[in-house]
Amino acid sequence: MSKPDKAERKERLRALQHDAEVAAELAREREIGEDVHWRGVGERVFQIQQVPSFEGGLVWDIRVVREEFKLYESTINPEKTGFLRPGYKQLAIESSELAAVLSSLSRLKLQPCLSAASAGCDGTTTTVLMSRGFSTAMFSWWEQGPDEWREIIQVVNECIAKFRKLPALQGDA
Image (tube, rainbow, N blue to C red; front, side, top):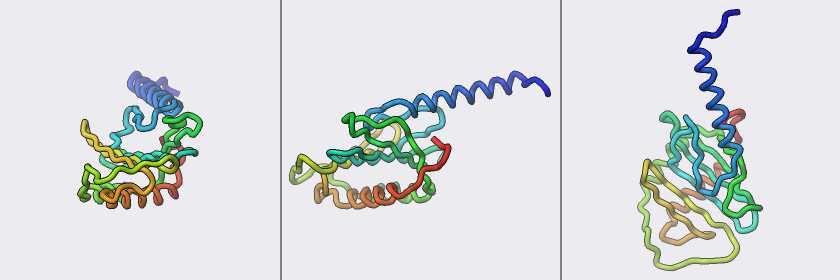
């Protein structure tokens, strides 16, 4: 058995460091909306946060990783308002399906100013973040949302229904 050369040892060390970086990121508690960071995780370009009043909700991130779209899910911690439980699981969905979602969102004409205010005590708040580089747009609504945002609400509700049914990929962060 030959002794590994310097390049092989360096590559193994780099892989161990990467694995430790990912494990530390997955083990930590994050605030809702806070992104994860490790080499190779890619850029978050779209996020849906579904936050019910009295139970844990879910957060889904669409990321661009080496020109492919990937979907990740986080669980909101119902015992600690505003925080996610540790973990970040990749869900099983084709990149082309996520590309179609982003394409449908890019065709929407959104009216940022609303004609009426909405408010409530109990119910579900949904928030959507869309970003590329240093630019971010955020829309947030309670329960059914404002009439002016019907199109985006419909797309987001369809995503939520689909994403909730997806299995996690095994052994993948």
